[in-house]
Amino acid sequence: MEIDSGFADIGLTERSHENTMQARSISSLHMNTLPPEILGEIFKYCLEPFTPDVLNDIRRSSYTSNIPIITSEAAPLQLMCICKYWRNAALQTPALFTRIFLYGGHLSVDPTIIVPMWLKHSKALPIDIVIEPERWSIRATSKEVKNIFHEISRNVHRIRSFRCTVGGFLDGLFPSGMALLAESLENLAFLTARRHPTVLIRGRVHIGTVIAPRLRSFETDFGSRSLYFVSPAGHHLRVYINQGVDQSLSELAAILQASPNVEICRLESAISTTRDRLDWDGLILSLPYLRELTISSIKRYDDLCPFLDSLRFQGLETLKVSWDQICTAEEFGHSLQSMFPVPRGSSLRRLHVCGFPSLDTSISRMLLLRFALLDELFIESCGLIQEIIKTLQSWTFCPELAYIHLFVTDVPGDELVAMLRRRTGAEGEIPEYASPLQKIVIRFCRGLSTFNFEQLQHLRDEHVAIMWTIWNN
Image (cartoon, rainbow, N blue to C red; front, side, top):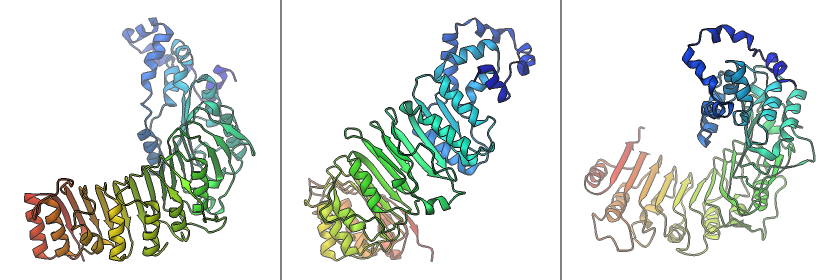
């Protein structure tokens, strides 16, 4: 495709801007005396900084507005409309073409033209791609979309970030049976368009195999077997599996087996199926780099406890688990004992439990005894609260605990005040090996009497920062 004809196809001609150039001041034309290389360096400042927050803004804007935010793909187009000299300078600046952001409801360019053109003019530089075929106002056929993805696959070796929201075009995006070597890939996300929820249900489309030695983040909201990736040990990886309708822990275990370097693993808002279940007996998932594990808002996970039993890690710092009739509290307690076998040997610093019924006091004491370094405890809608508060009255358990968050739960008022008085030093001395409580948040909790509130007010004024919201019946 010739440059002039390509830009003519998308309505960008030099002639359409002759009047604009004639009206410009003489001072603005002095930039044309700069060498193209210097002018190209100036053009780079037209690109917004590419940070993880940019991807979050992109995702929010594409779901909340039909008008996309101004993004990097507009910068070269606007610069090349000024004059022929600027167009030539822009074409000699490959960095201007390293971001292909095509999302939102209204596109001023034809993606079937822009994608090949940007891939061509970015030369050999790493590229970042955010693509959302389902929301393009310029409708593309299934064949055209697949051609775009095939063009991208030929440049997969230099893709640094790839985020794709797909729907009806999910099947056959990449050549079947093809292993893609993505040497530069660091961030990968395959998400489903909200307007096509049936894609989530029929699911399980095999996209392909991606070999990504530098992969650091993988996110999906449909079955993980739709895409396999290989990421060798030595590079930390983050895995996010969100809002999936057909997702099994067996599949998550397969990902973890292939990538023992996982650093953050979040499985949220998913519904499990029991097909293709693993034989959990004797299965060990060694995750030496895992720092955060989140399993929340899930349904029908009858294999949750075997999954937790199989985990082995050395430096886990954050554990978030919500109970939704997925197992009994005793089974969960047994799983935690398997995950943290050595008393006082756990590196866990943040524990978030939600929705669990009460446990036997001896089990609660045994678990808290393992978390000697715990400094933040978040309890939400949880029957464990009474046993935990009683246990924490002793400095033997969690001596470094600094923050407690209680949310939407029934609080034993007298026991809570007694525990706080000990933990803040208002009653008795704080041992040398322990740290005083720094903050407690009590929100939408029942069980506190007027006298309890007066006691908390005194503690807040004298010892610890306390924030509370009274339960509104």
